[in-house]
Length: 461
Image (cartoon, rainbow, N blue to C red; front, side, top):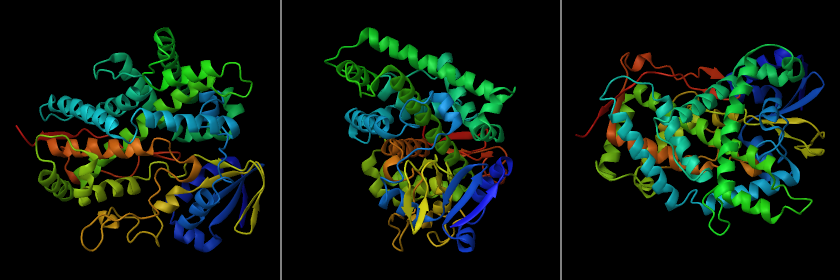
């Protein structure tokens, strides 16, 4: 196992360099299991598909721990699904997956919600009458409304100013977390608490989202019918009541607030940013956009909403959507895992309390898994007959027991929203395709895409 000791500030630069470099040359030089030291903190980095898959899937139990990321620990106060371990994590993950599925995640009922929200999105964009606009908050509203239906039991108007302020808070928080300041907070949390800076503004924004969440929970408590739960919050409140006398229960108010916060934050920004990036890609490559529209017109037509069943008949469109996610590489390092005990891996011992980074970037851009990893190429997901083919190295949602709980929801949203948009509009921008840069505006925890004013020209009257 290659090992190097580095000081905290170069540590940040080291990881940015890792994410920007060729994973093939890195693993060829030092092997797929690297150790670095952040001061006294040992960090193991797993590079390439084989190492990441072996850890997260083949040894899933050993690598199911979650690293104590200071920014997230402060934001969630140590509670909730995303940052927890042990029995808390097991109880909350099992309950969350079951409850979201019961309310339609990945099923026909959820598809109908997304179709309806897609219609709202198309109508709002049409109201611009082909004038240039920034799609950021339209997309955030649409995507967030889907998770709001699941969690809060309601959707919000695109003109709701309080809702728009919350979405701005979420977007700015993710941008901060992916900035140098955000990563410095993770390296020097105690020192940064005493210093002025952007991190205090970021935490104030999170508190606004927390206050909104607590207000919604209070409304649910006042109107709860235990026999007829309306959404995730109602189901959690029922479970909380049932287990209120259990000394080992994790169903209490703090976990409810932070888990709802997890779902609201994660269910809004990553998917809406991916759709926004997708529009940039389609403007950058108008021939790809035209080919997708031709395929969509032949299967879906101008009047009905797309369904997930259509995906089997839209192989090129499906391939482009997968390639967008691969090329965007939205969370290049993933959330760090953590060794809750000594782990034996590939002949090495990873000691207890070691941070573990399964470098998803190295999987999505690995030379031996992709024909042209550094180019946008939908052929990565098409066979010689033009049929869709999957690639095991397609892991934008991570893998194993810590994979994204909302993966099936995100996949459905990306397909239905983007096909709905391409069915209704042709996208361009005033500066032409050459003005679009696909390189992220911020790149560390998340690859945050650049923002553009775009033009949506209606295709049908």
